[in-house]
Structure formats: structure tokens, C-alpha cells
Length: 247
Image (cartoon, rainbow, N blue to C red; front, side):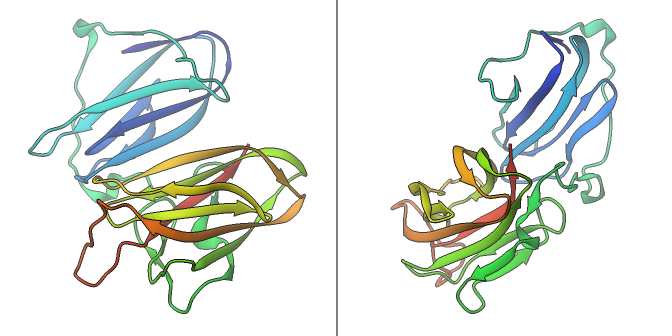
């Protein structure tokens, strides 16, 4: 496929599907999770020059139903970046075995990984790092009751109203959380339940940040009636946190 970029700038490319994927732009690999899995939301930010770019999107479809959604938008804008065209005569399919060593687990530029953030408040043994996700993995907040809090310290390069982006997991045993930054509530109830596992970036605009240290707080407020346990007695009040970004 070829993608027409209307003007030079930074663009967010996102792929949503229910299995493994790879995304190539001008022969460079941008996204790679070439392994069977239950749900995928992959996002990357790239600087694109005005004009046409070659794009290859591969989808590893395991047995069962499938589907895929691709979007390309200029950072801070909602409109699609251009038109996709396809010339079948010039298409050469790629081949690569679906093994874990091809999975892209590198951190996004400028992202602060959840497993590296300083924890200011948490219940005993409530957090654990699981080896999936970017960098060393994602942080799972697991042994949680209603009203429990998890507080982090993160850093901002400058003061002012900024966009705070949180990569949070959605799954069938995830709960509903209240999120606050520096004591100000960003959302009273964010339902993280989903029948399919995936991570999704959530944006909070005009968040007042101080230069240097800031605080991010999660409070467990409940769970979706449709939520189910992975194992009996494991609970449905959980949250997965991969990374945060500031824009």
C-alpha cells in the first residue's frame, strides 16, 4: 500500500487487531508483535515527510474469527492523514515465523515505563511486573480491594498544562479506577473491562504538571458486572499499567 501524507510532521500510527501484527513503513519495521495473542493495540509515533510512503501491514491470523483496523493521524489531530492505495502487481508477501523473538518490546521514545516509576503508596504485595509489554514488561496491580490506592511519582521536563498519556491494560478481570494527578481528579470512573486483552493509550488533556516530580494516583472503585476471574478466587479488581507519556 502507499500512504499520501499531506504535510511533514509527527504522525501517530495505530493498529488494532485480535492477533499478531507487523507494520513496515518505507522498508523500516515500526511495529512487531509476531506471535499469537488474544488482543492487540499497538501505537507508534513517527516523523513523516510530505508525499507518498510505502506501507506494509501484516496480520498473523490464528484459527477463529479475525479483524484489523489501521489508522494514521497527525499528532494532536483527529483526521486521517491521507489516502491508502494498493497496486497488487508490485506486492511481494513477506514471510517470518511467529516466534516471540520477533516481538517488539522496545520502549516508546520519551515514555516512562510503569515498572520503573517510584511507588509512593501501595498495599503489601499488590504489584508485580509481568514479562509482557514494552521494556521489562507491565506492572500489574492485583491484590486490590475497593478503595485501595496505588500512587506513583513521575517526572515532567517542564511546568504547565500538558497532555498526560497512560497506556492501561483492558481485560476481563480488570476493575474500574479513579485517576488523579497531583491531587486533581482526571476521571472518576474508568472501566478497564474488556473481553479481549489489550493495552490502550488514554489521553488526559490540560493536566497541570510541575517541573520535575509529580504524582499519579489510582483508586479502585469497583468492577464491571460482566467481569470474570482468570482463576477462582483471583478477583476482578485489577489494573495493568505499561507506560506513561507527556505531550
